[in-house]
Length: 318
Image 1 (tube, rainbow, N blue to C red):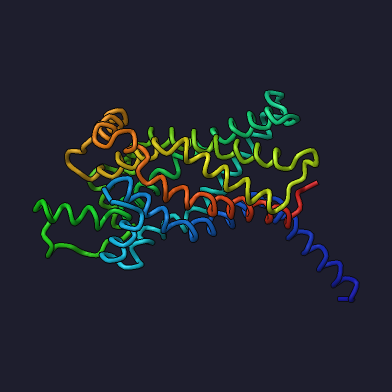
Image 2: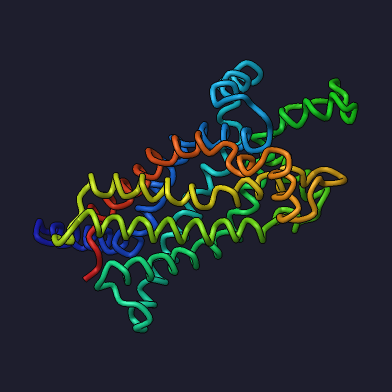
């Protein structure tokens, strides 16, 4: 084979590789952003879950108690399933979002010429994405919550005499899945999916709508955005989304926490909300918000920064 033929073959291989990357650029970008976000934010998420479902005097009190009882491992309990699956879910979320937005614009339902239309199409597309992704993420988040709280709940069961301390064994995410299926059946993995879907549809709509709106606003007339704008827009939209959707998340977490009990404390979301408000006032619906907001800005800044930079590295199909 001549040098010319080798060069032509190498060029064809590179072209094929580039086309493959272009085809899956959204998936690659979203997956990269998702893995970094999980690694950086999971300890904060674990603290948030504990504060939503149990009483601690402060964030530091929760951190100290968790570290004293479980060590550093306690902050990463239940991380493996989301770390493995988050790429699939995040890439699906961004793909559905981009596809829905493109379809709405092509059908003339929205245009993307003004700030208001940008906000509208991105919010609706985000809501569609969130509602669909909830069906995939509900089992994973349910297992994650059970894992994050397993030692906290176990202490309560031992104190009540429901479980002997001699019977305690090290759990795992797979064991949690089997326990849920044995107790509630296969569809038990989708326990409280209605509340979960409401949170994700609302939160993801605000998330994408807020990001695209802030990005366009910060870009000004140039309509060109750089890393700093992506970083700031991602962090601000993450905080805005959690501020508005947090009470729904608190209710969802408390509902999913008790699914393994023979007699769950709450029958529905409204009953749960009333109980939390009666017990702790409206502040009860925002327990754990501080740590969530502390987590939200850097995590979502990194999420969109990585996503946009990977998209920039991989050129779109022309």
